[in-house]
Amino acid sequence: MTIRLDMCHRVSRAADALGDSREAVRGFLRRQLAPDGGFQGRDGRSDLYYTVFGLEASLALGVDLPWGQINAYLSGFAAGETLDLVHLAGLIRCRIDLAESGSPAAVARASRPCVARPSWPCQAAPEACVESEVQGQDALATQGQDALATQGRDALATQGRDALATQGQDARATFGATREAAAQRLLGYRSADGGFHTVAGAMRGTAYGCFLALGACQDLGLNPPDPKALAASIRSLQMPDGGYSNEPAMAVSATPATAAAISVLHYLKQPVPKEAIRWLQERAGLRGGFTAIPWAGDQAVPDLLSTATALHALSLVGAPAEEGTDRHLDYLDSLWSTQGGFRGHWGDEIVDCEYTYYGLLSLGCLVE
Image (cartoon, rainbow, N blue to C red; front, side, top):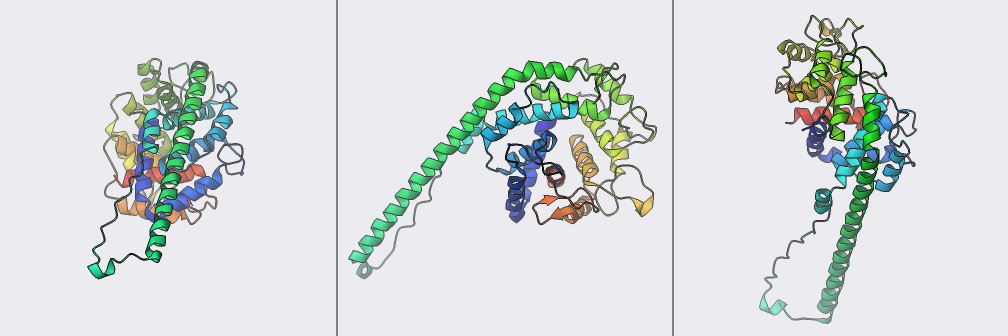
């Protein structure tokens, strides 16, 4: 598995657990799609960063999307020559999402015929079996309805199959044409210590940069250059308390950085320190959710980014937060909006694609 596929798997689990709320989330995601094919950021304009979250959540929930429109939006970024690492990794991830959603296997699943359940035979008494003109009209009407329904299903199946096939061909063609250039651009963010930084030419890597770059390498089908140096760059960010800081200059461990570090070590098949797992587990709040940094007593204020990344990283290493599941689910409920998405924290008034994705990722980890 890869970083992207593992996250998509858990978001798909959440889709199954949403129940009656699933359609509300689908509607929210549809409304977030901008006319140019990108998903909207917090300012209401299309944004490549938010498109990653909107696209993957939509695919997990089976939202019907304008594939050609989205592919055209992504094509506007070419091979990502002018993008920073965050947006370059997002572009690569979106392209592989589109390419795989239009794969032959996906097309086959979408075009499976709908098998109608046969009607139960009528057990009418002999005297009730006298055919009349009205019955004949009803029978003809029923036959006509059935024929129209069958034609409609066939037409929709054909349209869906053709749309998915075209989307897959276009997306795979674009992915193949830009793959090498995107890979070269990605390597430009490698730091001198063998890690990756969000700024090109850095001496040392960051936890976030290493996480993004490793995920992008996986999506491109490439082995990361010098995995041992990449792991060493991550290990150099561990703090005395067991957690990880995002950058060498930071003196405080942070939940998203620790989750990223654990994830990178996991996918590199390197040992994950037990103290790092314990530090992450200790960030669970008394009222549910996870905090970004250590807090004393009941002053801890959780947020959805920290919650999603912590739950996902803990599930990767087989240390799920089982004891606090109910509290974490209550925390997610407190961030749910009737708009069909999630807010980032208790003081947040905006619902967007990113935090809605984090809400789904958290839910998918909790319902395992």
